[in-house]
Image (cartoon, rainbow, N blue to C red; front, side, top):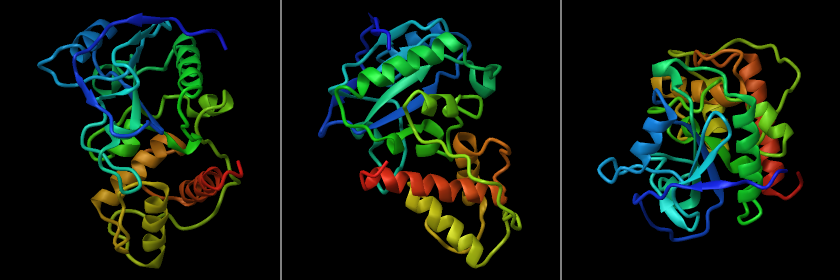
Length: 249
């Protein structure tokens, strides 16, 4: 790891933490330029911020001290907690996003993100299972950092969960389906962390949450249909996350 060099760009948009952070939430900026994103994150009228912003060329801006609560996750949920800002460090990664020409993340940028996460985790206890995307904690509002973000490479560098189980056959489940299989899918999503209380009915919310899971862990499809591969990956991610919870991984 190369020692990160942070460019000071203080934002006034923060308040007090109530506990040490144990989660990192990755975002894309979703704006045409990094300069515009940085300006917005520092604008007191915008009332949004993050702890860091990572430019495409690898420059890293520090906006809010890690000991403070930045305002990046918004209305969100993970494992029953609805104040994700209070327990997380927010990292904005410059990319135009789906609205302005979503594109691959440059190697220099991902190397900088990797070094940043390594550095953050020297100060705070953040399990790999708690390195998440904005779309994981806010699937009904957000798509970032999206299916182009290299979660597999990040895992290979030591951060986050990634699994590649054997392909699993099975009938695909989709919106309108009902029954035990849907109930089990929703229960598994809830156990992982999503707000997916089991009902046995595959509704629009379930489709949205499955799509969020696919953006992170099963990008072979992004339509919210839980085919055999999606469900196999969900169960494998659950097993990996349980291993970290038990201190076995």
